[in-house]
Amino acid sequence: MRKSWAMGAMAVLLASGGWTTAQAGDDWDAQLNQQCPRMAAWIQAKQAEVAAHRKAHPLGKPSEPALRAELLKMGDADQQARNAAIADGLKHPELMKAVLAVDAANLPRIKQLVSTRGFPTPAQVGEDGVQAAFLLVQHADRDPAFQTKVLEQLQASPDHGGVSAQEFTLLTDRVLLAQHQPQRYGSQFAMKDGKLQASPMEDPTNVDQRRRAAGLPPLADYACMLGIEYRMPAKS
Image 1 (spheres, rainbow, N blue to C red):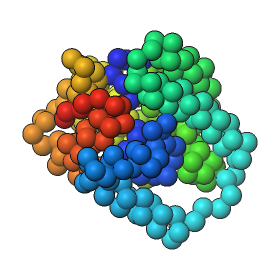
Image 2: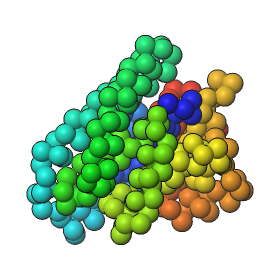
Image 3: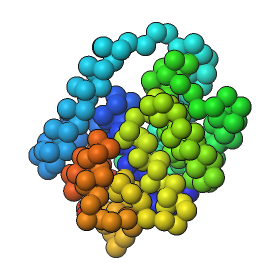
């Protein structure tokens, strides 16, 4: 796994109603409301937007419930390992090794699924199944070529294959960094001198304009949330 942690998925998962991290709860919400009120308001608005969309466009039962269950199981293992490492403040190597072990275990299966059946759709596995599949791809840093392949597949699919615009930007940035290019949306942060700092990005002056076009909050608000989430200072 690249040293630049996937410090981007949290905003999307909170917004889309997917997994939450070990810190999520009353204390986390209180800190967010107090320290990052604009980010808290953005998350609340996004949650309302997603809920309204689901009400207006309800999905039927997934056509492949067994596949959905498998994806959710792998996604849960991914999140449990990361939650433990994040709750620990990313301090203990054994917890980081556990994250890498889960990623290594999940990678062959998600690669097989995508290569033989394509990236799963909401109709097949439900929205939560799609989110789980995306999470596994997002954390497939051992195989950047696979991540690139999935990104290209989603880019060519209507509505990005059921993946939200926010999630799509996360994978875009990861792929760019893996190709030793600057990220585009500022979703990826790395540790530097004891602080979380946005990895190099193209045209940083206009990053908020690109983020706004993709439906993302301003970079400063996002960095504020990461500082709470990872229990350390963050700067954009």
